Image 1 (cartoon, rainbow, N blue to C red):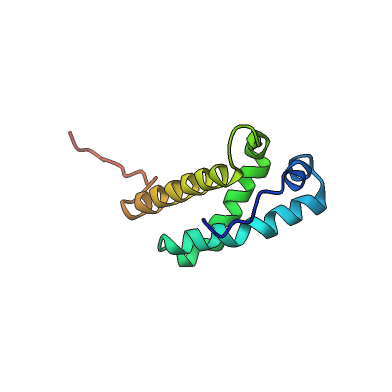
Image 2: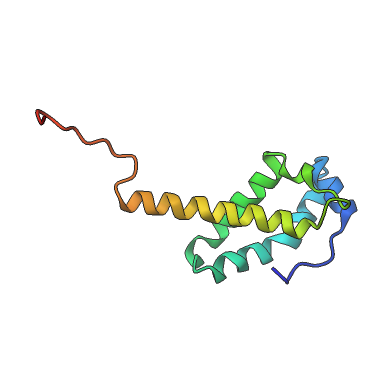
Length: 110
């Protein structure tokens, strides 16, 4: 994810505080690298959806509130969330190939 620009902490603070302009700027800055990261992992068709899920987790799940300049780089946090989202996506896709979630009746078998 070397495409990231330097972290703009005022924008990050504004985004996590619900400022629409800051939130838009945050997403517009970080979405392209997240999408490209997903594409490089062979998830071309799902890259946009996965990026959307990454930002939902960052914003709606409060993960962005954990971003702190004293604790580390925001890039590391975004990358960790992106990898987790990709991992969950691959697990779901793999489970679906195995009949994920379908319940089969054993009928009268012992």
